[in-house]
Length: 270
Image (tube, rainbow, N blue to C red; front, side):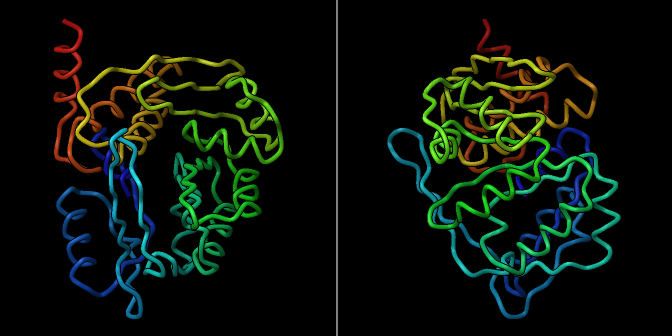
């Protein structure tokens, strides 16, 4: 959802596949995205389960702990035929591991992964909402993988003893035959493996309001620039700016313009 919001801000035309409850939160979500201009044609309505809720609590290190309510409507996304053309024609099909915690949504996801041409996995290892076997299965289906440093260390720890960051990245790529991999490291920047080389970015130092949604903004920025045929270096720099900017804002989907991002980093560079 956050990736779709930020991709739309960058002039792309994302569509979101999800399921919401017939409740006030579901109506509010529809209204918000309709107001943003993000496609809601593929929102499903659920009469038995509530709209998804996540309670986020930042700690003193600007790390966020999540309480992800279960079960909710998005655990029960049904496969319908109209999704096939949408996914087949998408420049990128972005999916997360959380969508696989329930069999109904997982079965729908697996069907769509057989149809998609460019599959982007944004790992979200939020205990207790993941299964080691399913995560490995999802990794094997991905063309492009985005993860944070803790997730990289956890997953490579399942089958290797590497301690070097670059070795861990190469191990993931070889183990699951993934073409592209980006690892975000918070205030320490990010590393991107693309076109058989590793690109490093030192990140930007900003005054953090909260980090909720920063990774999603980063991913939206990266994919949007790659869709525009930007170089990997340019895409990674813009993605880092997006993630840093959203960290200066409250919430995952604040109102902003691309000019706001330019202005922030012009000030920081003086």
